[in-house]
Amino acid sequence: MKISSIIRFYEELNRYIHKSDQKTDISVNIEKGTTVGALIESLGPPGAAVDLILVNGKPEGFDYILRDNDRVSVYPVFERLNIESVSMIPHSPLRRLTFVCDIHLGRLAKYLRMLGFDTLYSNRYNDDQLIRISNAQNRILLSRDRQLIQDKHVTRRYLISHTDPEEQIREIVSYFDLKNNIAPMTRCLKCNGLVRPVAKEAVRPQVDKPVFERNEKFSECMECGKLYWKGSHYDAMMGWIRKVLGSDKKNSRIL
Ligand SMILES: [Zn+2]
Image (cartoon, rainbow, N blue to C red):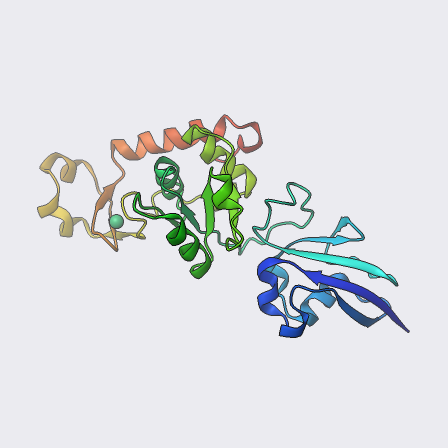
């Protein structure tokens, strides 16, 4: 027995579906017993790209079984500006978020890198460049500038509410539920490049003697060559991470 439903995909989910179905209500006839997740994937978008499903205005999971005349709205991951915190679908552990920060968020960019998140930042990016980078590289554009965030060309975005950088990093970690994805000392604070371990002997010419003697493990940025070691700045950084993220009750067990 067949039932009929109407389904609509929002924002970048339209990339996955047939051109004639983009940004419009799609009428479908489906077998009774079909789940909303199966219907979505049959039309193109992978489940991992979906953050929120509304059926007749109510959030539902992928396993919701469709009924006759249901109306389904499907929103992508990141498209949260207009849907706030109604998301019901657990985040995929494979989801890898990347960011681009506007020119006022230099400290936040550094903090994101400190936690291991791929974050582009330059104090020379203008609004057009920010939007282009965000779209071309699927990066979430972070800004406190409502006008920029609401620009119709921006598809991945988050409007930051706090002004203090420590509050901002707490806000991002909590909002995007990143506490299980934190990987300190994996990314260069200066250039965002990935950091990899390097043989101690190889760094001898580049570091002061006391540093060389006191430390066994060194890492190097694969992009700019900057060296890192688990010395006093590592301890200070881990202390900072605990302080910043630990004081948020929601994230109190991060480290
Ligand atoms: Zn670097």
